[in-house]
Length: 244
Length: 46
Image (cartoon, rainbow over all chains, first blue to last red; front, side):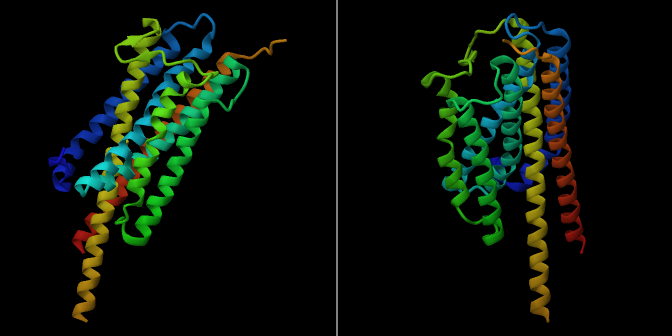
């Protein structure tokens, strides 16, 4: 982990890992969605709408995983001052926000036929909406920090760690409070879902996770390249001023 | 009284939005990466 904090070593690894994650992820996710739509059976009570699960559950997992990534990178930034940790946190933010928004939209589209409503203000839905707002706030803060001092401020890292409090709230919301939303069907080593639904779901989670990892690596390469270009142009400008 | 709803219209809408957003995010990530790396390479050559 500490070895990868070296930007040159990270770039060497990201050059082959990013297209691999992206390519395999797209193939696996496409196969899983095809399985979910065309081969998996309809559910006894929910009928065909259960097929939304193959998008909704991976989106929910990755919405939370994105913030766990921000919190982990923020911790590394505050404790070890890794040069890549600021970039890693920034790279997780947009994909995490996109998947959180997708989770809310697909959940709403599933809720209408299943519950008879697009939205309810219960613990799970509200805490997921709070996560989306946390992403917006974090992105705005990171942008402001970049503009003010080139990303030197520790404020986004502190926000990233404090915001992680919302992750266990999302997870346990369906256990702590009465909710329209069902309790967790998959826990570590246990599943209440029949294999007919479980296998395409696990495959979809793997495919979308690989896509997420590929996007994060691509964002990290982009942010790193932007910083390197800015630093080089600044050095050249300073050199030109001194020569003048 | 229960409303009659076609479940497939919800499934199709969810998949269209989900696949569209995912492909959009992949395209945007790759495009911004290519642009940034091109700019860095141009700055190195200058």
